[in-house]
Amino acid sequence: MLGEGIAKGLIETARNFLGSYVNKDRLTTVQYPEERLPQAEATRDFPFLVYDGEDWQAGLRCVGCQICEKECPPKCIFIEKSTDKKPDAVGKPQFYPAVFNIDISVCMSCQICVKVCPFDAIKMDTAFELSTYDRFGGLLWDKAKLAKPNQHYHEIHPTEAAEVDGRLADERAKADAKAKAAAEAKASAPPPATPPAAPPANSGVSSTS
Amino acid sequence: MTALSYNSLHHSSPQAADQIFVIVQHWIVGHAPVGLQPLLAILLSVVAIVGGFGLLFAITTILERKGLGRIQNRYGPNRVGFFGSLQPIADAIKSLTKEDIVPQTADKLVHLLAPILLVLAAFSVYAVLPVGRNMVLVNLDAGVLFFFAIGSVTEVAVFMAGWSSRNKYSLLGAMRAIAQMISYEVPLILSSLTVIMATGSLSTVSIVEKQAGYTGILPHWFIFTPWGFAGFVLFMIAATAESNRSPFDLPEGESEIIAGYYIEYSGFKFALFFLGEYLGMFAISGLAITLFLGGWNAPLPFLTWVPSYLWFFAKLLTLIVAFIWVRGTLPRLRMDQLMNFAWKFMLPMALLNLITAAVWHFMPAGPVRWLVSIVLVVVPYTVLGRNQMHKGHLEKRVYRFAE
Image 1 (cartoon, rainbow over the protein chains, first blue to last red):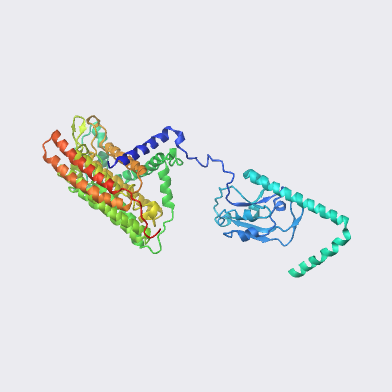
Image 2 (image 1 turned 45 degrees about the vertical axis):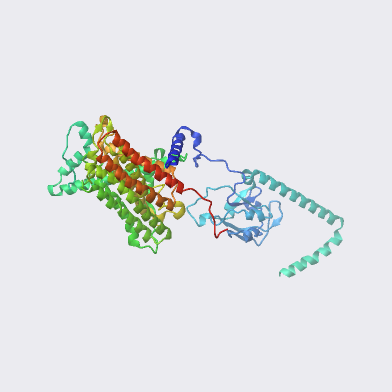
């Protein structure tokens, strides 16, 4: 008969209405600012720059290679490469980003910058309460704001950070071994090593100038 | 046309509580110079209507949001004030301080006038609604006619809004609104005609007076007759469509045409539309109460000591709760379903209901009259309903071009 379904529906909604006062389990809403659900480990929103050690300016892993800037689909990254070299966390002289800006109002959280970074210098953060009164300057983050310690990375993405640290340590060990081997080779046969090394260096200079 | 009829003022205590607003108004008016008294009396009533129903609007918005929330197993607004009770004030401040955006190509004058006209028309119909004993602004001889005539001005306002915005969704929404409102105005008026046949009067006050009195404990409301019950149900369905409420909210159709005719409205103009829509709902519920639910009469004979306006507002709140309940339950209809329902079900039912009312009127009182009337209501309902349901069976859709 016409109206039967309507009556059934009305009973169902009435049951929901009354049930929500009796049974607290029905109310699945989380009262957000006071209560929070734990974030999933894979959560990501905007990128940050990882630094090792205590001093963010010295420990920044980024060497200003500008790969992320070129790969960024919405072009929200702006990098100015330094002209000089500074020692990095390990003490090796490296270029560094003189300016590193990310416009997070443009960023679409695609994580491509993270994927392409050869130095594990840029990672995704999980902070999401980023509203600001200044929609232009307030959303254009500079190097100082983007830099976060490796410990922070460990806090938000523990498994991933452990994996990255392991890889970096491996690479460092390998490089150290290589350097040691090279040094040993150099030590064992010093005279023939220098002459062949000089011409390619010269040719490299002449081609760039 | 009298501003208020003060004919039966008794100053003993239950009557004093019942007539308190009338007495207060009388007392205030008494202080004014004689020439200004009628004007002041009307002005006071208008202020009371605007204030009272404006307040009811505020209460209803919070009730609706809370009720819908609970129906969907949510809390609803619970931030402002005690359990969100001050939410309407926050909403009012928000809508007042928001930027008023008018599209560059809009017809600016009509765009401005549309919400004003809607609210004006919505408020005007309250003039003939008796909210309590002796509490009606004007007792027009053609009160019901006045109500429907002014009530249909809202359609003009809606179309003004849709047309002047120069937006395709606005226009679509407005055209849907016009089609829907005109279609449902027919069963709305036809279903209320039964009451006019029974009372022989178009005056809302005398319709309420005809429903006073009790048989045993049953009040003489028209809803307690077969034709009155059918008429009430038809009236309420048509009223839902008239006030653009779910499941008949096609003109707004949030998911299809965003907000229909008020897509280009913001800030306070949007709030006015919102207000107009709710006022329309209250007014038409008030008319349903007047026509079928005995107006301000008490439902039981031993409850007559409760002030009459409280009964009116209790009935009004009950109907509002029913509106909210239905909104929380039913999904939006499709345009063809809406039109089919109006013309193939509502209209024949309303016309047959007129015959039922006539049969009831001319047959001698007794069980035979009840039986005949009930058969006259139930049989067409079953037949038409079955017809509707069989027509609506789903078929496998055949795509001719997009394969």
